[in-house]
Image 1 (cartoon, rainbow, N blue to C red):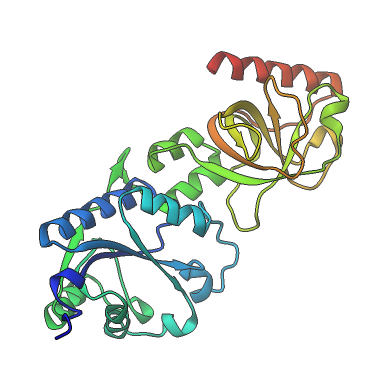
Image 2 (spheres, one colour):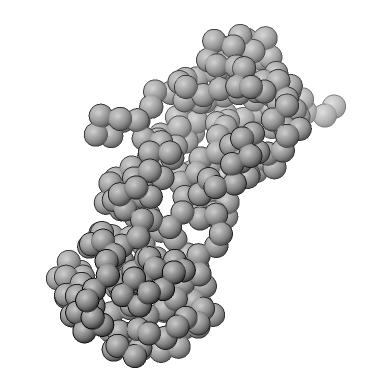
Length: 304
């Protein structure tokens, strides 16, 4: 006789969401999901979506992600969730009722518990809030657990709040508080204009994948790891912007690594933001710019 696939050994405590950034609010949901799974003797699992549902529902390609799907999955697993189910969010998925979605999900991972935030909604046109989900859970044989939001500085932590913090203010310190870790981006080092080397401050021009959020233009203290070069992180100063002193127009991400020499073209660099030092601005001369860069480097050294 085959085991019943819906027996406790085969059911899951599940939380559902986009989970972009995997911030402290998400981690609290994961912890609650692990707790429910442990209490019931079931496994915890996360269901997440790509692309961002708002990009499909609202036709909003401009939504910038805090994490790539690969980084998101890794961070979720590091939070103690062994199973991560990635769902391709299409208009067909968006058109499912909450019950239809949960029935479809149940074929992949039978539910023992559904753990979601108090404001979570599911189904076409966001039809099902907590009251509807409790009713569905009772009818379909799983419990629904509502988790309160995680608050920081008097407001709930959310991916939207972190995006606004980074794009409007470049406040990487607050973003780190909300994420529970430093905000980071990764990209490949490509050939740039070479201006940094001519003024004695060589920089690596980092091409960040399209769709990943790069913080507001400015100068930042950071650390970085260089794929294939060293296991340890290096310290650096990062300039994000259009280099107005040189009348450039395209936005770039340029990393000066402290006490480093070597060719890193083609290498993937992962940059962790530590502090915003100043706004980007136009200087009256290249010499004035170089003098300011040296002050930025000195400040980064003092902080390091």
